[in-house]
Length: 206
Image (cartoon, rainbow, N blue to C red; front, side):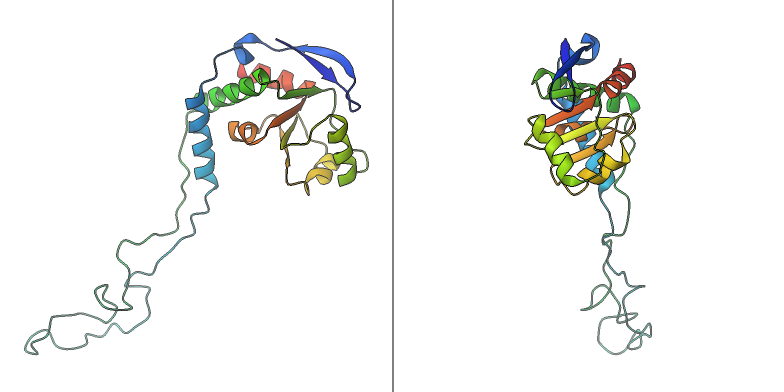
């Protein structure tokens, strides 16, 4: 598979050969699903909490003696059976992250990139840069490239001025080629990558 390489004015300046072993395979949707679920789980804050009988407010004194009153035995007013008592086995702060095999992550990224390439939603540019770091310059660059939908920008080492220019655009995400995940690719309608980033990705995913 061969794709055109364009510049910032959307003019063809060359071509890039995409390896069939990476971009020509059948798309494995199951791997993409596993990677997206893992990424979503890792991003969960997990700050939910409930108070157990040790944390709820109230005295620890025994309300009445154990026997002889005719009432049920009770040890403290913070008993979970009582109103305003502690919660039994309630949610506590924890991490939802879990380990996923590295081969699964690579396979999911390979499948996601292949899907975008086969859809014609992959744009390769010679460079991604905005000199003045202004948002309107980034918008003008995307307009020249004919991009109006949600887009993912990929570079080997993202330019700091470009990052400053696109950080206020809700439909634009910028990521380094070494940190890209399948969820990043699937979340975007179009993917714009530099030729250097594509070379690095092809080496990694081969």
